Amino acid sequence: MATVRRRRQDRRPVEGSSLKSKVITWEPSEEFIKNNHVINTPVQTMYIMGDLGPYGKLGHREYEHVLCTIKVDSNGVITVKPDFTGTKGAYRIELDGEKRELWKYTIENASVQVQQEEEEREQRVFRDLYSRHKEYLSGLVGSEFEMPLPGTLRLFVNGEVVSAQGYEYDNLYIHFFLELPKCWSSPAFQQLSGVTQTCATKKVGWDNVAYFCYLFTLEMFFTQEDESEDSLPQWPVLYFEVLSLDFWQRYRVEGYGSLVLPASPGLHTLTIPTWRPVELGTVSELRRFFIGGSPELEDLTYIRIPTSFKP
Image 1 (cartoon, one colour):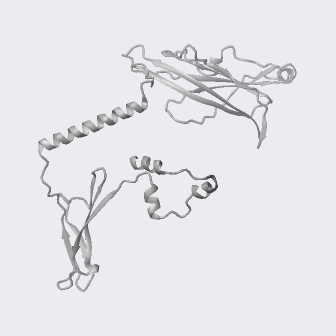
Image 2 (image 1 turned 180 degrees about the vertical axis):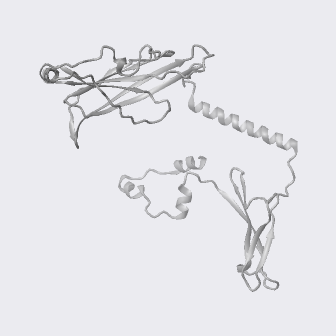
Image 3 (image 1 turned 90 degrees about the horizontal axis):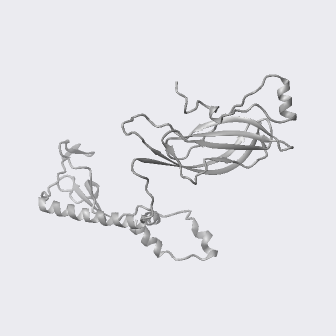
């Protein structure tokens, strides 16, 4: 990364006329790829060769074979290929010639063992290096990073109500709210509900789709009241109510739905099926079309099994 930083400092601004032509290198050379790759660690390589030619024909290139390759990078890492023999059998080289010859060889580490004082001194150097690097990272992060309280789970949700489709009427909007089970809380300024804008539908294939692209943010805390409890906590639930608005500014319920917030972090794309109570008969449908209104739930938590329900 230090090499990358130096390379970026060495760059010079490019004039606007020649910028487009130098953005993409269509035929990069091997040297260009080597110098511009992120992992650009200088490596020194040494080969241990063996001249396996017959007597009287030593020094010919065709009889030379690589027995071992040793690479050392700028970080001091030594790579030996093939590895030290150890308990494994010897390596074999078969030669095709007038006489079919088989050579066997082993690779051993003949270095003197490091003394205990030198090993301790090396460990002290590493600890000092790691502590300085930790201080450097702490300086980049700063002291303004807010940490949750001990024993508290902090949950952030950045969500988006993308679209709604498959409903009977036009001019849809969605009312949603968050239910916090036991042991969950939210900041005092946090709004746990929201209403999207009213959106006209668009014909996409066989369905009428309303695109909302409504963003919302939720923040929650979970605190275990009794540390002896081993049961998993109940997860917060989002409830949705899809409504339509007619020409006389009267609303109709188009569907109810719910969603248990995902327990795993990351990006989630979820489709929520909805339902609504329906009265049987033609009279109710006529009333819904001409007068507006429809059967509604008094408590929206009855969209699913309420968290307070105990079997």
